[in-house]
Length: 332
Image (cartoon, rainbow, N blue to C red):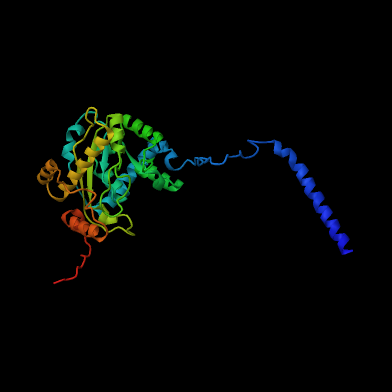
């Protein structure tokens, strides 16, 4: 009896399987778009565009209502935080005075060093008002535009434009070029991201490329002190003093390649860094002989770079903030 029941159950299961197979057979004749297309082996399907990252549309942030709101943010929270936390000293506005006095000042590309998230707010407050009104900021797409809420805050408060860190894509470069042609000035960090260890990084060619493409002058800028106040890896800011040094506007020479122009911009910022720690004359004397201390620091590793960075900070504004002095052992 049990064997008959088991055999009967197996027959019913087989009949059910055949019925399902017969019902599904017509569906096999329907391909895309009723079911996902097949992908050949070895072919990598591009990621779906989500509207975030470098594809985020920031056009709404430059409309009148958003611009008015950003003005309130700039003159309110950003100004207050910059004053209380960074207490900046600004040097070099006189090097931009000739352009600022024009009836229609040209758009500029500001190329500062980058050690902290405070750098952008500091630059917004430090740039002369004739360029500050129509200022856009190139921001890392994978950090500031990876979530909708972060993208909205960055676009509204900073007028930020998403760009790739490693290489500026065609869409991003075309957008930035169009904004510059429309009279917007730009803040772009040639290092591509914040310093990892307090020293500078080699410059990428974004500022030089956009200048060559649009004809807008590049203004080299050195920021001293923000890395010690709120550098990468710090949990909370430590109020202190900073210094922002503006250089003279630069244009590419005739037949000068983007690579060579970028190297010249980096040398100009290096000279400004020397000026921030010494004085104008000493920095220019060293620049004439190529002896300015490099932004990237000594070619050491580990603790020797940390030691050299501590000595460097004692010379500048960063060394003047209230912090505990590092105790060194007495070796006799």
